[in-house]
Image 1: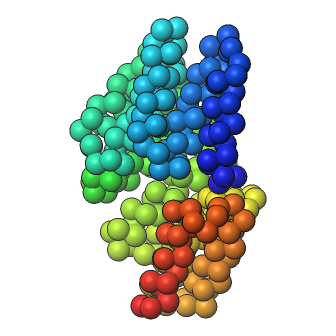
Image 2: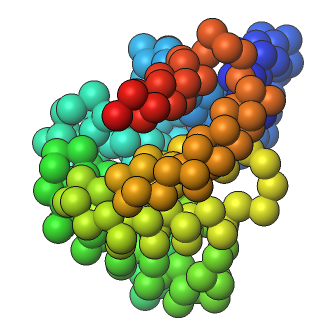
Length: 244
C-alpha cells in the first residue's frame, strides 16, 4: 500500500503484454490505473487514461461506468480548481445514474460526495455539508452501519469543512468518527491521525496531539518512502505544529 509507482508499473505490464477481451476487466484496469497516476501526482497521465476509459465505456454503452468515469474526471477538475466543469461533469453523472438505477437513490451517494468535494474546494462549505449529510443518509439507508469503511471519506471531509469554519469540536467529532471506520493500519489511518492531531493542538490537548502525530508518522513510514510527497507533507505538518 502506498507504493503507487510499483503498482502503476505492474498494471502497465498487464496492458502491454496481454490481450484483454473482457470489457469489464479492461474498464476496471483503466480506472484503477488512472487513480494510481492521480495519487502519484501524475495528473496528465491520469487524465489521459480517464479519457481512454470514458471512450471504452461509451463504446459498449455502460451507463453506470460512464457515470463513474465522469465522477473521477469531475474530482480531478475540482482539485485543479476548474469548479464549473467539475460540477457539470458530476451532474451529468447523476443523470446517468438516475437512468440506470430507477427509484434507487442510494446509488447516487458517490455522485453526491463528488459534488460535496467540488463545493468544499470552491469554499461553499454549507452546500458541501448538505451533500455530505445526504451521502451519510444514503449509506445508512442502504444498510451500512455508522462505522462502515465507506463512510470514512464522508466523515473526514465533514471534519475538514468544520475545521475551515472554526467549529473545532464538531471537526474533532467527525475526525474521530472517521478513525472508527478504519480497522487496519493504512495510509488513510495516518491521514486521519494527522488531522486529529492538528485539531487536538488547537484545542490545547498537546500530549494527545503529539502521540497522534508520532503514530501517524510511523504509519506513513511503513507505506511511503521518505521522498514521497505525502510523507514530506506529513512531516512538514509536524514541524509547523511543533513551532506554534
